[in-house]
Length: 313
Image (tube, rainbow, N blue to C red; front, side, top):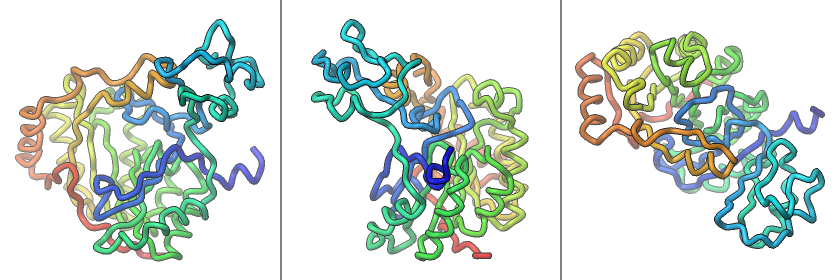
């Protein structure tokens, strides 16, 4: 990887005027690249770090334009679906596709470009809004530190949505700039965490405690999946964890959904969250009551504590 590439981060999307990714009105940058492979992933297009082709077979009109421009033979007249083994994500087919059946997910951006995007919306940040880094895993990228430093120089409030599965030193340094970490704890049962995410729970918890020791403000979030982590053991673990931290505002439960299945289909995959994993409204409400019964402060989905000004070291 050359030096120019190292200075860039692959971004899948920029969402403006969001009220569900931190306090106030926020500009959300979705980073591509994540070390985990959660079975219920809502944004599977953010898992791989490199740009990927999204293909909607239902929208394809069979014109063959993609075949003529593909430099590696990943598209053929007989088989309109891209050969994922050959596709390099160059995006040439997306430039000539008249129906929008082919689209490229991911484009490289510099830290300066990312912060400039957030600054375009600065007029809407009054009352606690700002920039939210999401993904994927924002701290998958070393250049995220540069984003944080540049955002601080512009006086932007920064919220980071993270799995905590990233280099410890990178997360510890980020605590000096991030006003609020939305810290995903997928499960407090180590064996299940490994089974459904492919990552070690111990790394996530150790990084959370390191950031807490640095004064990083956190809100623990957990996607509740029926038949997997939606049980009292996990809820008790979440409560105990939140109460053990000095700078944790509490816990926010999220209802698992199968929205990622459509994106998986566009990526040529068949896996994804199952509908039966989505808790009923009644069950989901009961999880909040149980969590409160264990002494945790519970934040309703869509409500957030303030992103406290971080000490800039």
